Image (tube, rainbow, N blue to C red):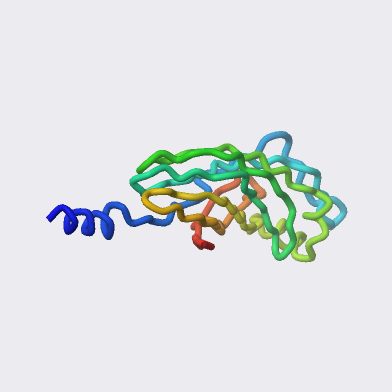
Length: 170
């Protein structure tokens, strides 16, 4: 009877579930240095603070190491930052503030920039990749990758995070 109970727990409560990673919010710091000058886009460096959220649905802690957050504009990497290591308790959520430096030089090299500035919105994406493991009975290593839409409203200077798609690389 005890063996049957353990077997049921093994396939229900002790089954390792995938953690969830998302960008919960974005804020810009420093001056807004994106403008049109003589019909061309003039861009300076900017810092975006990304609120990266790691939610752990498991009955044991999810321990994660250094990861990375990368911001793409089109197919071009315009900003990168390392995420700190940490631990999400069983059934818990951890928020990390990650400062991503956006390179004005890389941003201005994207051909569609002028049209997007004229339209008022820059559509970017933030890819967050966090490696970690969960140990309940056995240890399972995984890499959680989330791709989130990011919109920069040129008129207000506001950055908003959109929907995130998640992938698990085991």
